[in-house]
Image 1 (cartoon, rainbow, N blue to C red):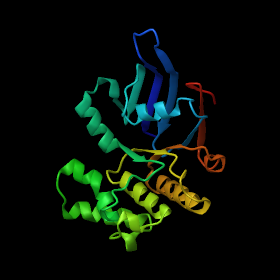
Image 2: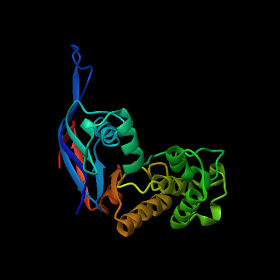
Image 3: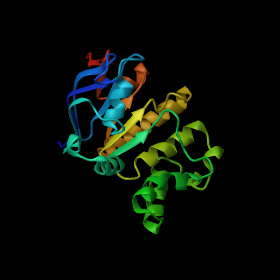
Image 4: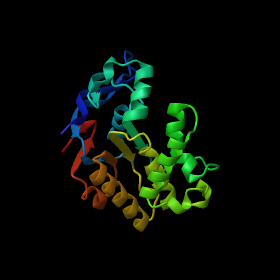
Length: 226
């Protein structure tokens, strides 16, 4: 299977070169292939948020090598990193971050509009197909404020898939949902993973959901603990 993500000895320090320099990631090694569904767990302050920001190309490591879809990100400039992030990675956060005044369809269209600059029929069709897939075809013209929390998070999942990314980073995507909605959103991501072969990296504190993943990676004090 194609390798979607590789971290080789990733390190991250803050206040580099000063007396208070602090290293928070201490040589992280991790690899994921197409179709993997992995849970990333760890206590608060373990470094998992820093690690997720680096994998999502929102921050650069201090040392080591990060490959996304075979591309060595350390060799890329800011513009190339932005392009890679927009095409290869989808994001689902604990809070959906939908644009309240926009409809479900318009929210799903946003990544494609950013990429292409203007709306067209193909973008609208793609958004409608994704909303149908997440079970929200009837609500495509509803504004985000007129949807339940579970529905809003389903829109966020559809938006994350808009550019057909190789990797979806889901940071506590069920953390603000009730138990039933959390299970529904998780099951949706799992179905998409199996149907499309999309790779998912799920950050969660929910042991029950983590147990349903293919693999659990635990981060403690900036190191892979198991």
